[in-house]
Amino acid sequence: MLFDNLEYISIENQTIDFPKHFHETFCISLIHSGVEQLDFEHQSIFSENGSISITNPYEIHANPLVDKNSSLKFDTLYLSNDLMKYLFNGKNIRFNNRKINNENVNQSFIELIEAIDSKNSKTIELFLKQFANTLKLLSEENKNEYDEKYSYDFAEIKCYIDNNICDKFSLDELSKMANINKYGFVKKFKASTGLTPMNYILMKKVFSSKKQITLNAGLTDLAYQYNFSDLAHFSKTFKRYMGISPKEYQSRYTKL
Image (cartoon, rainbow, N blue to C red; front, side):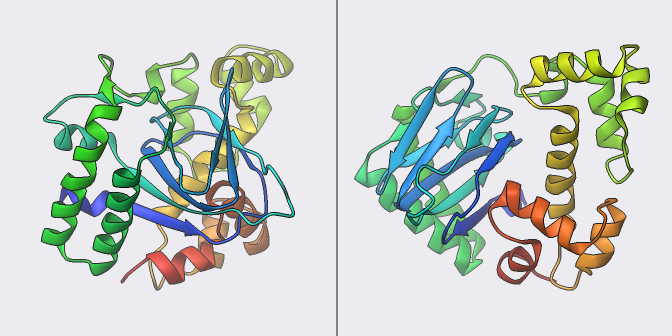
């Protein structure tokens, strides 16, 4: 079912900076308290209590903490591009306005979160379509397909990483594949993607492992499967990109 891939995460108190990363989905966040900072390449956006922030698929961004002494609380919805296309009658869409202040959108966002918690597919579909309707005037058509592998250089390297994501990678190995010396590879990869090779790999490992977390999954086994040194290393890295630990994610958002 198309709506099975709809997901949200609630962050009660963000205490660490989110490093540069991207998602394959649209990320739509409602800020409940504090101020969220979104850093793009040439722009920073600050979203306060009652605002909604949006990032498009494969859009490099970071989320540094504005004030480490202030609590940042927010919910984030993850909507795949396939789901968005379904909701927008087959059109690719994007959001150029990354900050929204609209009570109707906020209310529809909250109702969709409650619908997801109900686990009733008809209720979810109803409120999802209602939420999409509130976003229509705030979006525009995007003529290009979203596809990370071919949007930058190093497509072969990225395919290799995706296909072997559980392996342990080395810069020497990857630079040889790219036919570039190690230091030149790091520099060119970061210039192309906005991420260092190792940060890119860690991000990919976290998002891949998240899909493997079920209610009865062994987190220690999963940590070793993805070649983290131990569960503590896996948990720390997971939280850097997701805002919560894998144990918390498992207890709150997974099912058998």
